Amino acid sequence: MAHSKKIWITGAGGLLGAEVARRFQSGDRYEVIAADRAALDITDPRAVDDRLRSFRPDIVINCAAFTAVDLCESAEKAALGVNGDGAGFVAAGAAAVGARLIHISTDYVFEGDAASPYAVDHPPGRPERLSAYGRSKLLGEQRVAAAHPGALIVRTAWLYGAAGPCFPKTILAAARQRQELKVVDDQRGSPTYARDLADGLFRLAATDLTGICHVTNAGSCTWYEFAREILRVAGLATPVHPVTTAEFPRPARRPAYSVLDNRRYIEATGHPLRHWTEAIAAFLRE
Image (cartoon, rainbow, N blue to C red; front, top):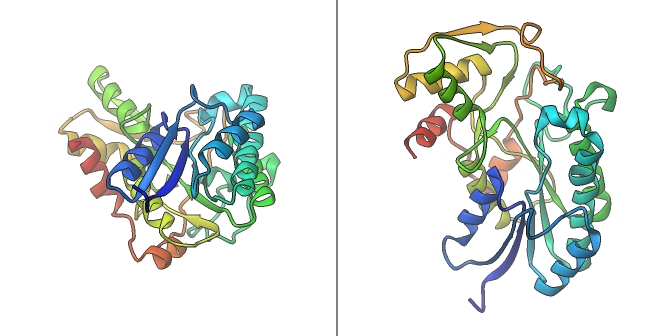
């Protein structure tokens, strides 16, 4: 273990953080400290600073986030505290101990009006055109870049996994309880399996990449197409009907198009994430 790098993971109890901790703990390359929300409140700068100075990690991966998108609309102050201020505190603490930082962000920083995948240098959306969640995550990106110029900001999208609530679990439960389902068919993105993203972050940790990087499973679909594939693979015959966003209003604005361009990640690692259809099949098997 003497030659292993020290890695500190925030939000380790969450949907992504749990998979990231599992991936980095496999093997002897890293000595891992995995801090969940109970162990560390990232909105407390003194606590963040104390932990970083005591552990002195080589790499910090910030997976801690307020991710309840609709709840953010009525709790924007709390979302800004975690996703904005908290991200900045982690970045400042990492910079102070000379640690590399990988910070997780989202497709929600874009307005969703593109017609081709968003490149890493595409300007973020205007705050008034974003959801409260999107604004909070955009603030986080800005705070991270200001506090830690060498940080790597990784945007992902449509995340699902075993360690928390997610779209596939919701669809499967609904399909077993209802005679038919209605799912939005005018929002397009790339469903991303948290286990695959964790492997992508593992590969990125071995590079010296800085700036912004997009990482999702390959391909894209609408939520309706995703739901149909989930039920097909699960062997459930519940009918699914396409509906518009207008027919299915939610508190938070969703980007109509949020496919991300993964070229920078692929160039850095030489390893594109598998197609979303392969990933969901693996998730349902596992």
